[in-house]
Image 1 (cartoon, rainbow, N blue to C red):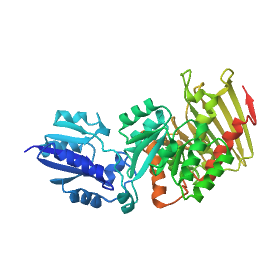
Image 2: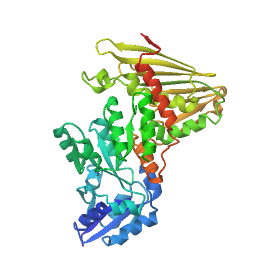
Image 3: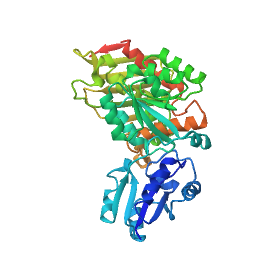
Image 4: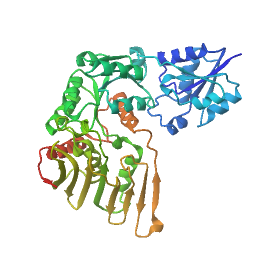
Length: 450
């Protein structure tokens, strides 16, 4: 008897799951299906699982393809299961190509082609929803987003919109999507929601057209480049009952959320100063990040992260704002900007750079102690509360999985499923204040040139 084994979460069981199990079954005579536990899903960074383990096991049982169902509880269990059950073939979806090659020492490993266009109206109505998501843009971040999405339950990335047919076709094939389109109206009609990952200056129009057609929008930062545009989009989203969420990944990560709560609890006393830095060197001669016609520059590219921390910790009541910038005279774009935000009783200082490198840490200073978050602080995995008496110091550790894009996607889906238009992790007013400060910089208001 030839035995085959496969594993999965099998949340919101759909046609894609059924087809994958069917193809796995055809590889042998006896199919064992491993269903992951909630704790194991969390440990491997799987988010937004909506059904209990019992419900998911029942999903698999009802399909009639599994000869035996087991539970996957921990990392490394696959090797033990293969040996324990005398497995001949390990089968898994093709979006995991290469991930399980180490199992070839124990049995044959087969990657099964992913089923495209799996979500159905019936399934979306029966459960909280398998959201059909479309990508606006097919650049670097869109590619990372597709990879991250496989760790989030309840979403299927259907297609991509862009301008160049050749690159779109390649993107669809590489990521096994259902379709691509160069017609935005046609593209929108095929999805329930969009993720906008195009240059900053294009966000407003793409978001507006999607919302007007009743589609939810997750938009990369900065969401737009003016307060007027931001306020208009939020009003439109409310009127059309759509979720509009700015994709600042740090805002939705577990470590950062805990950091903010702890800092504001009074553990270091009253916060008097915050210092944050985010720099990265860009070498490319012709890149979007340094193109002023595409709203490039250090402040527009990286400023949102620092402003998020400042506003979350000190609020929106800013009394004075000043920027100090080093500009590329030929490109007319800032390669480095230092900025000060003066609050009643506190000051925040930020440094961003695409042409200047510095230590990317975050320091929150209080009247009783301070919190130190090492580089890269925007991927908050570890921070330490420090006091005058070092014996009182305490360290905190949190996971930041992958590129972090899964956290913003999970929050986006959660809002859609709950029919909630507001996220406490990044509120509308906070998002608008971040955009207001970036807009002031772009108008060269209160900018001192280095």
